[in-house]
Image (cartoon, rainbow, N blue to C red; front, side):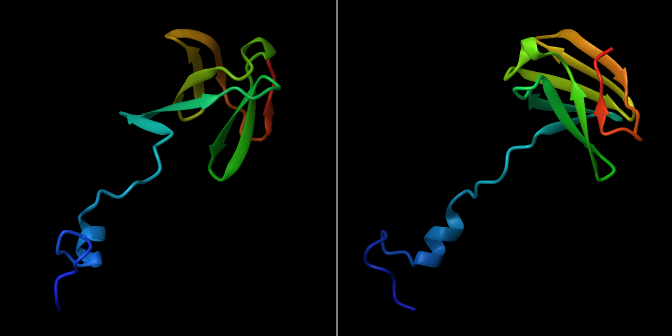
Amino acid sequence: MRPHRGIARRTPAAVYSSREKAGPSPSFVAVGDRRLRFDRVDKSGRVTLRRRGRLHHIGVDNAYARWRVAMLIDDLDIEIGLDGSPLRRLVLDPTRDYQRIP
């Protein structure tokens, strides 16, 4: 196969395979047995969490709408924090889709 003239004498396949491929950024990080997940509070004051194929809506507060929060998830125990200070701690009820603010 002859060298390509337009790409520094390399074939298009060689140029393509030499570039670093982009991938999705992870939305959570494993911390031992727990997960640390970053999310944004929606306009209704809720964050979502998928557990075992089921989506759960967790109420935080309307005052934090569109703020970025961190969720530390240890099976059913969840802590939602902002800049290191906890906003809400709860035990997830897997039978309910919406977890109300106490």
